Picture 1: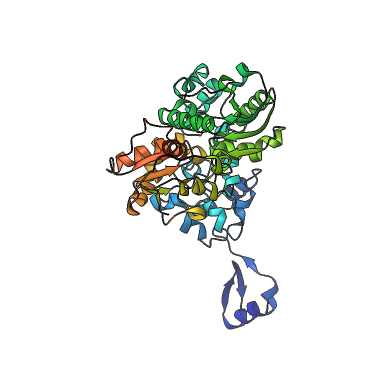
Picture 2: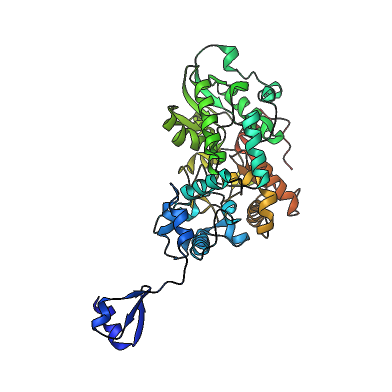
Length: 428
């Protein structure tokens, strides 16, 4: 207050913290608030349950410096707040769909403006109003109808097991307790490259004599990306189904392929009564490295992309690196953006299904930016541990003109290769 009084005396008119101070001492205690903004739009957003923290922003700009989307476009949480503050509707803005929920902004925000809560909450309102991008709505419809966003037949969910090269136990056929129930997920079950990684992981499990089974056709999408994209109702429907199916069987722990499924089973499913010990497959295998017998050297320069939902969301950085470091002949190099500061593939928060939408607001795809960084560090293989990343990065390798220079491989594929279990894998 002393500083404000001094300024009021020194100047005829002064503005301190948005408040007009008149030079008269007597009027010092009757300040008039100056407002250049219509805050009704911001207020309407912060009244949405989950979106309250958008109002905490004080425009420090730290989020802009770390936001991967801002490096390829004109978006950051700070800009979202500013535009909303100026009366621009977030529900009607493309900004609402550009966030990949990578969590990098929350990592540095001194006010804990939580876009991981804000974006799903506001997107849910937009979905209810029919304002979501068409390709996202198609993914929602496919998931509701077929149990997967790709639109594949649920009857084909376990077809990949026919070409795995080893027997993959299916719980409904085995009808016996298992130590591990492997939740495979959608892209590892249907996408051609995802199926190759699933087959590799099945061979690794078989070589380690893991007592496991999968749900097969009884499994549906875990639904975490749909939840983050604004379809909580769909997520709850999927979760209820999966919890019911899992509860039919006796097992000691879940192992999941997908970090997004890991996030769901770790944080969201327990709220609905589905609580089991859960590990990402890299965590599970890292604990069993002393049982792994490698017979072939990799002899490649490899770098690793940290998945947002394994790393920043859930703090797991060491398990994937432990597996990679154990591979014979590997030259493991870290990119500049790694661990907590890792870049984003662009697939999170529904981004996997909105490339056609987001390309109008970006100079390049996030996956392309990441591939360029891998090339910059001289990598011959970009190792990943999220099923979204193989197709995204392989497309980016081609679109950036680096086909033949960089291969994108799941860690399970690299392990199977060095264990002599994946002879069909060709490393160029």
